[in-house]
Image (cartoon, rainbow, N blue to C red; front, side, top):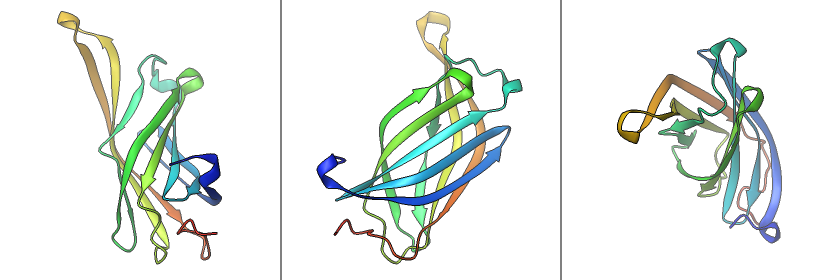
Amino acid sequence: MLEIANFVEVLPVGGSVKVNDTLMLVNGLEIYQGAFSLSLNIRFAPDMNIDHRQFPRPTELKLTDDTGTLYNLMNRGSSGGFMGDWQHNYVVQPLIDPAATTLTLEVPKLSFDSGMGRGGQPEATSLSGPWLITLKLPSKIEKSGDS
């Protein structure tokens, strides 16, 4: 799906929002034939004392556009932890609707795995948002993946 042979272009779009001393950013979209890729960067304020072992997981993500299209996000991988930065990568389908002018990513909350609790079960905590990131799409792009 996101194979090099299927690469079309990078869309130079970006957006960010800060809620509860937590910054979320999207910097560009990779367009492929049949899907696109979105990377969500998460950065915490130093005084939040987030342990690098407490991996933040965005939950109930929702990506929509201004035409009403709801996009499916499939986790492609995550990394980070040192210096308070994490990155989550997603494969997104369907392709961007050619009539769309904006995409909006909604992250209602972050869940943290904070180690093992009683009985060997993982303890989870969360941080509430919501974080809403709006991406203004370029007026002429290869949204269909046809080149």
